[in-house]
Length: 132
Image 1 (cartoon, helix red, strand yellow):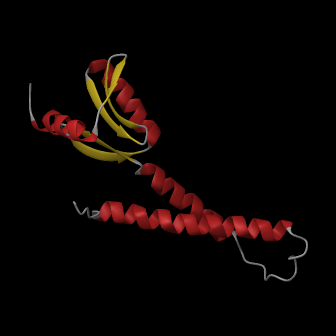
Image 2 (cartoon, rainbow, N blue to C red; image 1 turned 180 degrees about the horizontal axis):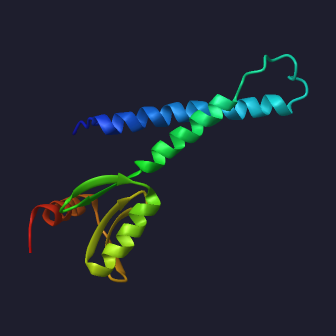
Image 3 (cartoon, one colour; image 1 turned 60 degrees about the vertical axis):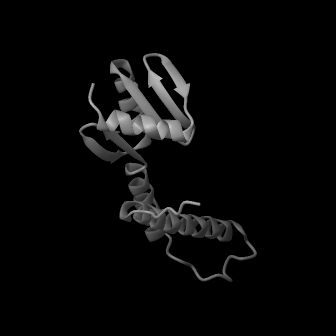
């Protein structure tokens, strides 16, 4: 059995996601309290504007680093939309090996082929570390 360890960037996003989840639950609970007439006046008013701002900031940070794009020139973080646009553009010019929540696909032209993780990892290594 292999053990995996998160790097600093992954830990940062994991903590950010956890905080954002807790803030979201708090936001929903406060909305419920505001709508429930039986609870109104029995629960101290909590200023929620800072929570909304924090949630929006956290969502933006999570979205900015949602995807890692790796090329022969290096790697960078970006939004899902930006990664998809780059993949669509690159597919016209060559190959794209896409690891996403939908699975692993090798895309070329208007075609795509699903890949198993082990095979995709080998191909990823060859695409990044070899020249044609």
